[in-house]
Image (cartoon, rainbow, N blue to C red):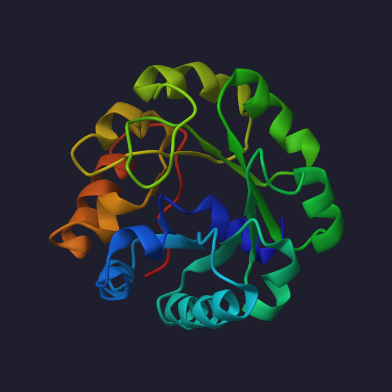
Length: 223
């Protein structure tokens, strides 16, 4: 296990930033969340931004993550991982196939994969993924949903098929509903942190719920 995967294994709270959806205060909210020392990984998700602007924004997030000990990954844009200084990439069903992302990035960088059911979770490690997002769990306004949110039932069904692969429930997760998916010991959260009235407090509540799940979750992340 390389250093990135060791750090990944310790991640409980994973923040997915979609600046176009979160409003003008998203960056301050992200910095407040990171300042808790409890956010282990951040993803930049921008589907329409041109590459040059994306790299500039990614480099800003890279610096923020470095300052607070968090991993940083980009969404979809495998070709920009190096320019962004990212620790890896997250790909979905409509993006570059995970096998090709792994081939392009080599063995040392992280590759995350969106999954939606037991079969996709079970196949993920063999396809080259280091971790998966599993959802949608709850309704969300951040992205258009093609599937009915599965909530805690989805997580409960899929976890036994994951083996040692870290599973991050995703989709509409907040500090108020995370208990329903806390059996994963981890969660990926967007608006639930970046649009919260107190992002730092939201992260602390999320971490507390995930830490107290008594599940297959992460070790304590570095502060």
